[in-house]
Amino acid sequence: MKWLVCFLLLTQTAQAQRVPLPLWDTSGTAIEHLGVTPVPRRDLVRQITDEGAIEIGFVYDHSGLSTIDFWRWNGRFCLYVDNHYWELTQAEAGTIMGTEVRRPFGYTWPTGLLLLLGVALVAVVASLIRRIKC
Image (cartoon, rainbow, N blue to C red):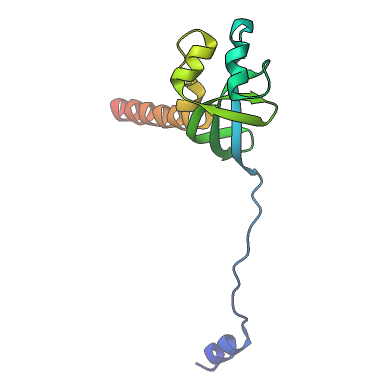
C-alpha cells in the first residue's frame, strides 16, 4: 500500500499534447476549372465583373490528407481570375458557357472517398472468398 501512495505522490499530472501527424491536414477553398469565357459572351461577364477575359469554374470547400481530398462541400459555380471569384447560379454559368453545366464528378466523388470505398470493397470481397473456401 505504501508503494501506491508514493507512486501517486511522485507522479506528475498528465497533460494533453497535440501530436503532429506524418501526413498533414489540407483544408480550405479550391476552384476547379470548367472553361474560359467565350468571346461573344464577354460583354455579359463585364456586367458581373470589371474584367471580360476570365474563366468559369466550380469553387468548393474541401478537407483531406496531403493532396487527397476526402470530403468536399459548399460547391457553387463562379467566374474567377487567379484566386478571386464571383459566384454564379448554375443557370448563369450555363448561359455564359453557352451549354449546360453540371457539378464536376470530382466534387461529388473526391479521390479519398473513392479510395476508401475501394478498400472497403476489396475487404468485403476478400471476406466472402474466405467464407466460400472454408
